[in-house]
Image (tube, rainbow, N blue to C red):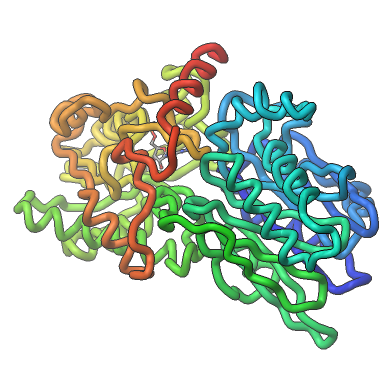
Length: 483
Ligand code: AMP
């Protein structure tokens, strides 16, 4: 998973500093690498591995001139990419175009290794936006150069849709002085458009999450629809071009874990949805007649909103029992189980007062390998808890994500091929309760009933796009080799 923000400011302005602010707001979507591409008649690019605040020094920002700019934060998929794999990417021939994306092409290896070489195109990175960029440029090159830009962009984006498979949202710049964005035909990855009115005309923004619009002072206009493109010239009014839509299936894991709670995705408030997940889990608990705990304690940070609402539903006290050390790196991507487990202990320290001699209910948003749950249950017992149950605001995760969310290979999932009772024993809980799939989907849909379904592939193993399963096989082999 990655994040992007693109801004078209009025002529004469420099927008890279605002793109930088947007990237800071999107940092949770990727801490691996970041980049900004700006345009003032020519492209200026700064990109590197690392966190946003470490990459852009004052002299880099001064070089990023222009009223059109896109920025990107990268989330790791397989291993660490090189600086060259960081985004955005641009080309100057057959015409100038720059791009950044969030998502994953499931036919990238086929495009890079077979299809593009047949056309004498040599991709130099292992970043799939490069394939999108060339598919776009090739199709655009075939369009009538005298046709209006909204027609040329339709040709270019439909060329991308024809050649690529997978899920992606893209933002880009055209050297002819346009900003554009588009969302793949199933709309799995988010993309929202914002507007800011100034006395001299409107300015425009497209981003992965609405929080990037908030911090840069843009008002939400609307999310792009599945298979739709957005195109605008600085100071002008935009075109929304429907290119090719299939059933819109936004990723539900964005709502469960990934997105910031202060964002709206497809008009759904992430915060309110997490609260609804908590409420539904509470109802499920009561309907099953499970014994009431004395205290509800969240695993910080992403489970907090749901845990608070769950506690209310159960009429049980809510307490912060774990303090998170933000300076311990990402435990999730550490190379082996031992390192992951000891890092979890350093990351989450208990306040024993909240555990001593109590029947506690711990709440997390998801269980992947089971390391976090196993460790925090152990810590809760060491801190004196009498009984420790675990409630999870999503169903068992059993299948990898072919669309760029780094989870695990299929054998890593603690719940794959196991009954819930076996998972309970694995993590050492006295009781384990997962939110049921239908309840989760309905709680998400309540935020926008026009969404008829979500991509729930990681919970079901059923994916909305073709050939996802083959891609996962290739990915598993690549990971094994990388290890
Ligand atoms: P695990 O310890 O492997 O069971 O991972 C579960 C924990 O990781 C939960 O606390 C989640 O909030 C968090 N989590 C779930 N999915 C991801 C992900 N794709 N990347 C990083 N953390 C995640």
